Length: 183
Image (cartoon, rainbow, N blue to C red; front, side):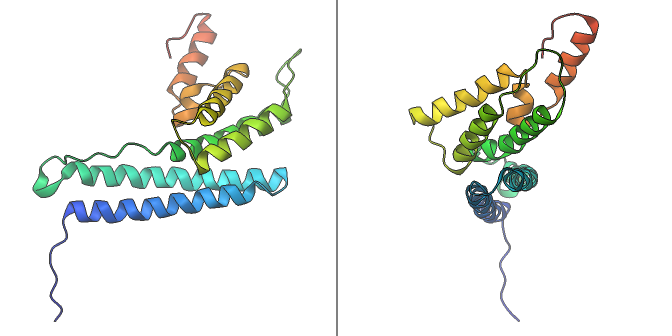
């Protein structure tokens, strides 16, 4: 009979973190490789990466629950900060959705969508999902360009950055009521 020792919650959380990081690296590699594909195939790969990224976020949430339990039920002292590359990975799929929607739908008279700008911000977000340095001026400028694009087309930043729909719901209700939203 093999001797086994009990595994702590912290050990499980650490192993999960290593697996999550490996999976995130794989998603980033897929996205970088997708950059050489034609637009429809590239967008399909980005959507796939977004779905995988959302699943990884769910696993990360579970991992953090384990971390919070800590050792013997005591709160854990270590909390890991969210990886900005994971945020940009999730944003990438939402940017592709914005781009595809605004290219394909009639928004209204006088509305003109700049598809080249859409391609540029998708490429910027793809780059940031692969490698982000908060101290890099280029990366900060790329992040701001994505936010400027969102503002230019009325894309809710809460939804773009986090996938949260609350701001969209409040803004839609306020528009219906003819008032300003506090989203």
